[in-house]
Image (cartoon, rainbow, N blue to C red; front, side, top):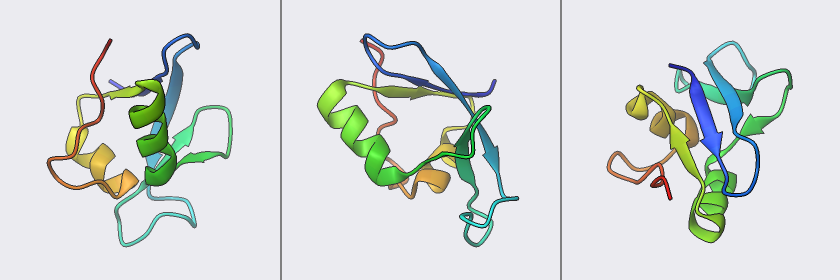
Length: 80
C-alpha cells in the first residue's frame, strides 16, 4: 500500500517514501507527494492532523513516523 493522506473535505493525496532526496536524513526517508517534488514534513502533518482531522493511511506506520519525525507511538490520525 502506498501512503495516502486524507484531509476531510478534500480529495485524498498519494505520497511515496524515498531516501533518494536531499531532504532525507540518515536513512529516515521523506514522504513526497506523487507527481510533485513537495514533501510532507512532520510539522505540517501535525497541524493537518490536529486542526483539520487529517490522517495518513499506510501499512508501514513505522516508516511513516520516521519520515515525519514523529514519536514512535504518535498517532497518524484517525479516520473520521
